[in-house]
Length: 117
Image (cartoon, rainbow, N blue to C red; front, top):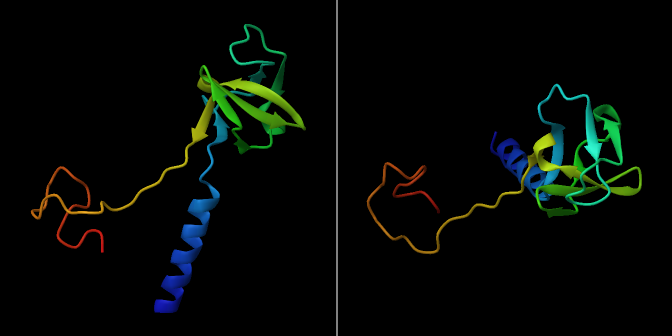
């Protein structure tokens, strides 16, 4: 039983590391059939519209500027408005290096005597 748990923990860690980069994972709202593609961040008119099925989601975000995100689609760089897509953001978590309060705090999730060991 323990080796199975250990293997699952390793696989879960690897999956988290692989998803560390911000990615566009879906249109917003999910009923959107096409996404506007812009030549530059802040452009007033889209260069073209791409059907969601042809985007090849998830898309790695190369750069973000003024609520637009630069992505590569079909070997060409385009900018997508942030309000038109859902983004999976990388997150890091860890334990504090020193314990500030030895008493459990109800308002802090996971706080307790054995929390970061």
